[in-house]
Image (cartoon, rainbow, N blue to C red):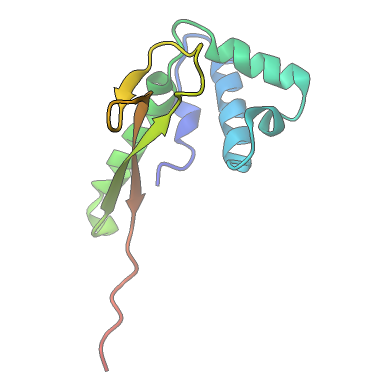
Length: 130
């Protein structure tokens, strides 16, 4: 769901929009790799870091078109049931002493952040019992 929605991203300039879409496509094509490997080269990595470092470029702003497209597709009656499977995970950054903006997580002795993910799934049709 939401396939191709990244193309609707609006960062105020067509070149920035195209750059964000290209970076998103590279990340999606190789999601298990690190950003340097996803970008494929030093120049591409610098471009990604520069875009992500812009004050008006945020995770929310880059993701909003995908979220909107996913919601719109899930509302289509012909879609049937759509399950939104959610999970919250603690990301422990206690070993990263210089990282700022972390919160206390877990039992109170670690620092990090909570990541809440949601996956939209269309279940397969039920198999009739024989």
